[in-house]
Image 1 (cartoon, rainbow, N blue to C red):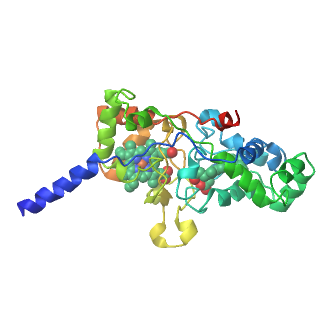
Image 2: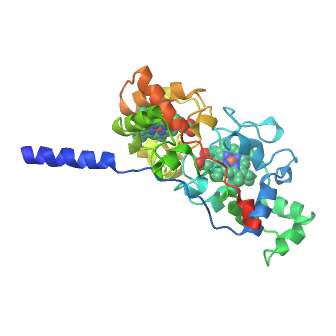
Image 3: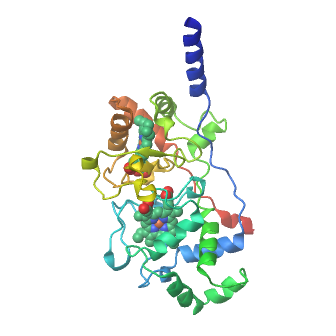
Length: 306
Ligand code: HEC
Ligand code: HEC
């Protein structure tokens, strides 16, 4: 019996000792010409029905890839139905959207373009509209079949692959620089592991690779039913993709309904709700120091041109 207990604690200790968070790569392989075209499209309001909204209206690059609003504003002032997640590092997540309805980034692009609350364009309309612009030449210089909705998505995805945030202090620490983060952040990381946050928030994105249950019905402020919307399986009610915690200090407000403005409230809630634990003020503030060390630098793919 003793031996079994010993073995068990040995395994637990081992799990705690290995790093289950891995750094964002310092470089990505991309087709620069496609990424340039994708960048232009990402910032172009002509992708929307009334020429008012671009991808960048809701995913601002200088605001952590979000707009810091509870709900985002699309065409004609319409509100999106769920809080906008970041575009940063989304190429590393296992599925896209809170309920994971798109398996790939390519499939994801079709969502906002046609969503009546976001850009409200039919794909055919968009192809016809863009064929009348100087995009025509640009597309033909890359794609044999010119402007098609698939090629539009392909170019945008190539640009999205560049929207990664390497070199956060925590990644430098993972790569061996002991001084890259403070002792407080190191303590926070220990607590994050010991308390079990790591069970859901791990991997390259410190999230983004599994679904977890969230929300007592009365607590959920949006109408969203999570993963259930995709599978229609009762067991998936209120399961959401565990969000990435990279750049989390910048991507407030938090949770799929944007209910919390501060990391303090969110971390407290997570500990209570997901783990049934109440953490003291100091533990929470240590965890936040760790979370803040996950803020990286926006990768500059344009240096590849030189
Ligand atoms: C009106 C605001 C708005 C616009 C415009 C918009 N998005 Fe989004 N984006 C959202 C919202 C809201 C979600 C989450 C929707 C959901 O999960 O159901 C989202 C989700 C995403 C995701 C998935 C992220 C994740 O972690 O699941 C990506 C990637 C993304 N958008 C990229 C784009 C691109 C590319 C465009 C332009 C073609 C675009 N968005 C236009 C609001 C917007
Ligand atoms: C059982 C899995 C699970 C555990 C354990 C867990 N989380 Fe979460 N976390 C989630 C899910 C799911 C969400 C998204 C919930 C939603 O918005 O519906 C989330 C959201 C968050 C957010 C907000 C992210 C955003 O972009 O809005 C933060 C911050 C966070 N968690 C931190 C923590 C911390 C700190 C711990 C440990 C005290 C923890 N989590 C434990 C699953 C988990």
